[in-house]
Image (cartoon, rainbow over all chains, first blue to last red; front, side, top):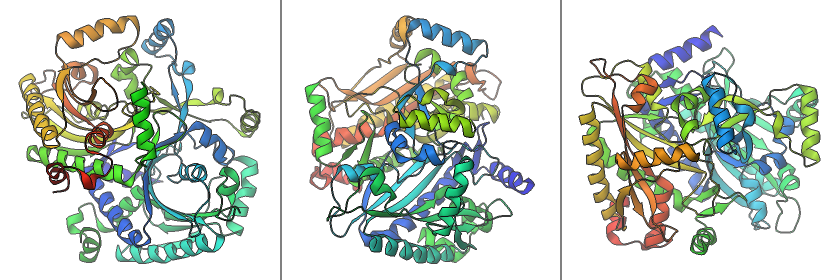
Length: 301
Length: 301
């Protein structure tokens, strides 16, 4: 943990991250952002040959979609719902009085129809289901958004708000598992070109509570989620990319159908953009001008 | 209102916006996003001569900062606080039972330390105050983030989550008012080059409640906020850019000091990125390949 705190302190002292007073919520410098932009360019360059449909959602989805997704069952502790003041003049005076006394004023906030997005691909499945059956070749999307997970931590690689870039494939089991295998291979090449050490391992998602233990075992035994881990701020390496095969889970959740009416399978590859940037700064130093020539060529061309 | 709904329907039918089932929350197509990227490039090109410090915050600030900012006094109805589940296994079972019965499950959500950002510049003032007195030339920032305002509407130009790009100037009254005047002039030239009709008018912010009526009058009488309005989806034109002079308000709120210890003045120019993109699609058509040659040259070079 000391090493973790110390890397965060270094990032702040180096001006790459700007503290806000809340663990996991930071501003990013122009240098940090440029690395993200360049890495996203690399992701685009690798994926453009597959002609994905580009869609960008805001960092939120509808609360109804969050409810239907099952996320509150598996990860209730990480989800964020957006609440607002919905009262009149009198309620407003009470709110301001509580605020001025330093008392809790948030009990009167009411849940809106909006929740924060836990993973960039979440809004895609209900969207596709509403658009009708998939064509025979399935569909492929390029998405990116800020995501929220309520897990305050001094580990700079565990932010509460961070960006995830994803390619999302919907089709037959054969189509989506081939997609996932292809991206594991592409990712190996990309991260090798960035001269970062990595390993590909089964994932360990933090499923909630007693029932969650079983879900964790199932996830590992079925090999549904692989992660590419890279040392960032901790002795244990950090998951920076993930390769997920959802089987027909989202078909049953949302009604995503194949051309023949059968349930679609889905898979996605996700790039944790802040984590990858932090890994680059950790291994190559805080000034990208001094990064190895091969890494600079890969990112800046 | 019919015209408004009709333009939203056209944007959805044209694939530029993707509905989610909640007014003001939409996905954006790749074409829509490219226009935003290109317009941001134009903003960067206009502003780079002033050598701003580039900072990017996530779409959130700390709840404490929202409280201190005074936003809950003026616009409580628009603010969004982020709430999470903080219970144990037993509470989780109750939550899932409420969900499965279609009952309200959100009463148990607790306010986190995070709130959504109402305007892209909000996290800048406490950051600068914490960094000490301004240098004699003051400081200048380039910021952008998604912002949240809880005002569900079928007007596509009134989204609940939208992006705001801003330049923020902190310094003496003379420095920041000169900055504001300069940007009104630059914006006139930029929007003229984009061949959009516009007007620059005093702003009409939706201050809350009875006390808010007086704040509205003060804002107008003192000319503290100008807006560049462009016809988008309504008979009345929509504010797409704003030019704000905060006097020494944020100095007193946050303690932003000049080099000599006196209170700093601040000003900002904000670009409503979705609104500007919507204005371009409204006036030049849904296919940027068909836009006037001068507009294409301005955005795509």
